Length: 147
Image 1: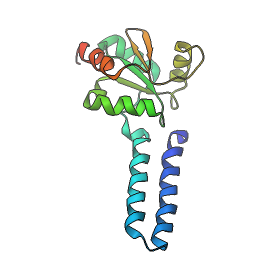
Image 2: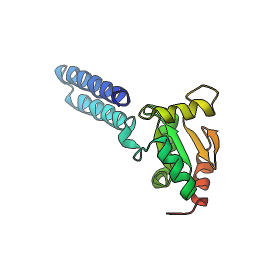
Image 3: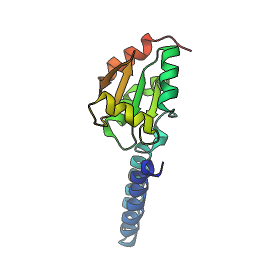
């Protein structure tokens, strides 16, 4: 769990140090702007930017019941963040599995990708797709029945 928060904490800590240095040099506006930018980046790279994660077994069970895709992701992954942002509200129609929180999820991703933990890996109808096109994911999520 702590591993997911290392990057966001480092971003905020660096922002505080750099902002303090800029304020000390007489540039409070630049210091505040830099701090806000790094806090925003920290938020985007934290687990808070993603829908609530479930375990791999739970996601597979739910996907079998409702047909919605399962997305395996990890905090700090730029491609996962891009997928999440571009899906917008539609991201909540998918089942999200944080592979850093769920060892079974990490094992599933390794099994799909020949031993690599390549994310995002989207599983639709039992078939894995590594870093798929966002529009394709959106159509797969829309094609599945709502619950």
